[in-house]
Amino acid sequence: MKAALIIISYIIFLSISTCNKDASYINPADTTEAPITNENNSNSNNNESNIASSQINANTKITVGEIDGQYTVIVNTSETKSNEENPNSPKENNSNNEDREDNSIASSDTNNTPTSYNNNDEELVNNGNNDEEFTEKNNNSSSNTDFMFFDASSIDDSYLLGKFNPATHDDFTLINTKYANRSGMYMRKDAYQAFLKMYNAAKKDGIHLQIVSAARSFSKQKSIWEAKWSGAKKVEGQDLSKAVPFAADRARKILEYSAMPGASRHHWGTDIDLNNLNNEYFASGQGKKIYDWLNKNAKKYGFYQPYTEQDANRPHGHYEEKWHWSYLPVALPLYEMYQKKINYQKISGFKGSDTAKEIQIIDNYVNGIDSSCK
Image (cartoon, rainbow, N blue to C red):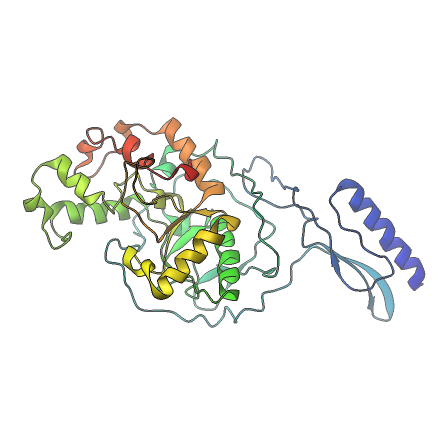
């Protein structure tokens, strides 16, 4: 009986490997689990556009096992759960070192025609504290630099401008406080999954990554912008409404580190700020170790630094932000769609919006990113 089942398992393996020229060889006489390698499979769900994986993927396992005394061929497409600490007991860091931008989500935002999202490599779980996370169940897998890029052709203006609520958008998930310095932050699901892989790889190297800012809606960016515009929130100790009376100059001052509403990469849910919002932190000590690790490894997981040091190659845009990292497999298609769909007339609805065209917010700031992100 066992011999017959081993032969059956071998036939199943041959069928799969015929469809997948990259499938790894599995000895049918070996009763240990062995993964089938498949880097190029993708899964589409009707007209949904997403970064997805086939059911027969890098985590598919074929074994010959014994169930109720009978030898049985087992095809298992699920991943093994992480050996990381229990997500049901997240440790929240209550410290808030943001001195530039707040990231809480405005509940008054409305959800506008969310693009559906499905990924068979992710599992949404509840940690018992109304805080959801994606448990990355194959933490030992190596990084893959061959990314499938998101199809942004169906993305509308409201998404590109951040005029939706991440808390209710189907493509977004709540970030577990295990990975953040506070609760209530959101990311795109695909970007979050990639971050989890990067987080675990960094942890193995003794590096602790912590998200301090993530998705921000148009209305939240508006509240940040207008607080600085009106002087309610001081910038470098100054009330800009008095210190910088000329509108264009005031806008440029705010734009040194804060994006104009409708022109922020944080609207897309692909961009995160890590560990600290001061470049000085990353110049020495643990901060430098974190930044050096990110420079060496982040690209393996799809993350790039859009705001590098300003020089002849990046003369415009926000100042350098060593903390800001963007998930390029989704951010790049969204950036390209932004170029096609958004014009200066569409950047409006907040104080100082009339300066957008004068200071060339799209040309100088949205486009004022490192060449690796274009």
